Image (cartoon, rainbow, N blue to C red; front, side, top):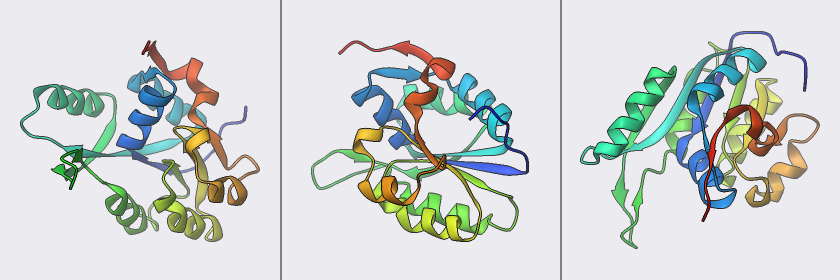
Length: 173
């Protein structure tokens, strides 16, 4: 993976998948400035859409939103709501899929950062249209077997492969 991809490429990132995959499973935090630079330099990612649940009353989330924008991510919000268990969920899957398909004729290739089986149909569609650049999974051990079987050969890799390039800090549970 040393060569640089060329083109007008876009990234579509499931923010919750990314954050939870690195912090609660692998116990490290991403430096989003480093991630944005890596995506630009390695994959020619011109636009990086970051899908995230919106919690207007939470000040720390507002700081997160501002820092992501500052680092060059385009935020796409879905209002976070409590599920039947009382957990706050942003559930951005459908927004990510729809926004990717809306922009299909604008970008050359799409890089998807997600590890959720709900994205399989999008990945399969982009793959067969020769529009899928890469799939970066937040946690390979929790990645659906369907992804592993279908998107190998340098199309899919875990974010831990680039941890040293984008790490902010280790978290100790």
